[in-house]
Image (cartoon, rainbow, N blue to C red):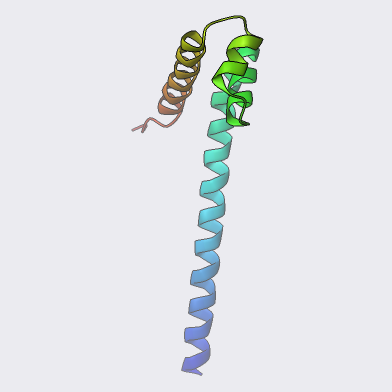
Length: 93
């Protein structure tokens, strides 16, 4: 009987761990989605293209700006996302 109790305890523990990880994952994805919604449409488009492998050179040509300006723009977008995530994740007392 004690063996079954240990098995049950292990199964419940494993289930709790899986549920906790899934909830944490969903929370993070929700916060990321909220942060992405704060971007203007053009910045979101540029960031998505960049993450999908479009080169800085291609992005600069598509947007009629220099490679340095494109790189600065992407850095600015990333900073905006970080700031938004930090705001959404501040600990509230």
